[in-house]
Every structure is written in structure tokens, then in C-alpha cells.
Image (cartoon, rainbow, N blue to C red; front, side, top):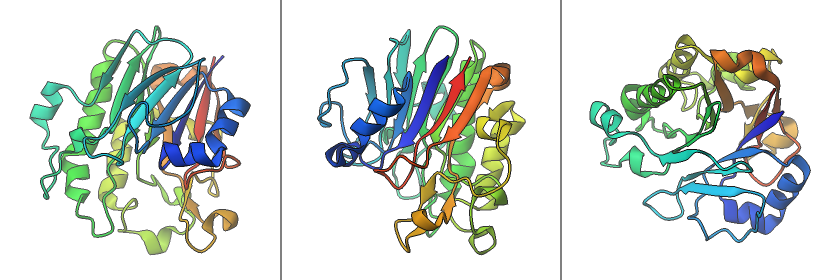
Length: 265
């Protein structure tokens, strides 16, 4: 069995300072750990993980965004960001001149039987100023990235996708229709992954609402479970039957997100 975890830590150094990251590693012992919003460069987070190989993709802006993959098994190859061909095809610079491909949002590790991708999808912003980037460039570019990998071997991609797919994926869908994370455009972007053959692993095992991975820090939302499911593990259809469990670990504290995971046979 192989366990693959994904966690938006909202600042790895802060989670380490609080001791929550160490507790998580000691208890869950993930084989592969995908991180998002690390807000750090390799070497800045003071933690000793002798059992893991560490691979980082940090944003060009310090203390912002960032992804990483920690693995007990050394990958065959690790790449960061999108290929030159994808960068050429999609306009990944937003209306304010910010290059989403320079924000440390994608890191890909090749293993013997599959690829693992850690992704931190750009937030559309309260004023939806980054929604055109999401709809026209980022979401189709990331799908193209995963489909290109899939030509060689199956893909597992996980991370903070910054979208609730359906009304079952957030506690208060009606008042949030059209808000960031629940626009028609973002939801269609997620649906495109499913239409392309990727499988939302959590929904293989669990239906209904009440299952969330992110809660606003305001109004005691986490204790009241007024949340959103915006962190996912999606797998190529070829891997779906090998997924033996898919879990949201709401007991793990330290971030406004909690980890999500799959167990592969």
C-alpha cells in the first residue's frame, strides 16, 4: 500500500513552529506528501526529515504561494512549472502582469508506475480579477499538463484547486453562487478534469455534504463545520480501482486547510 497526502499548510514555517507538522508526520507517516502554499524556500523551514527526499517549487515573490513534494521513495525525475509548449499556448500572465507560472504552483514527480503532481491553483480573488486567468488559461493549461503526462503513465494530481465542484462541496452553496471558488467558470474548469477521464477519489467512497477541507478563520467556522471542499486528489481512470481509501483528515490542525489523502493498492 502507498499513501499519498496533500495539504495546503498556509505557511510551512508557521505550522512547524506550532508543532502541528511534526505531529502530523509522526502520526500519518505519508509515503508521498504534496504541500501547497509553503510560503518558503528550501532550507527556510527548520525541520529534519531524514526519511524523505524533498523537492520544492517556490514563487519568485518571497513568502508567497509555493508547492513541494516530500517522498520516502526517490522519484525518477522531478520538474517544476509548465512546459515551454504550454506556456506558449496559454496566456498565464494575468491582467495585472503577474505570471502565474512564476508563482511556484506546480511540481511534478515521476515514479515507476505513475506521476504525482502537487498543484496550488490561483485564487480567483474576491473581486474575481483572476477569474479570466483561471477560465481562459490556468485551468486548461493544467489539464493539458496532466494529459501530456498521462500519455506516458497514469497521473495522480492533488492540491488546493480553489473550487467547490458542486453544491455538496460547501456548507452554504446558495449565497456563494458567483463568489470566488464557486463561479460557473471555476466549476466548469473542474468538470473538465472529470470529462477528460480523471476521477475525484473522495467521491469513490463518500457521497453527500458535510465533508470539507477548508474553513474560514472567521466566525468559528471550523468548529461549526461551515466549510468548503476545495482540496482534492484526482487520479487517472486507470488507477481508480487501485484506490482503496480516500480521506479528509479534519483532525489535523495547524492550517485553515486540513490534509486529504488516498491509499493505493
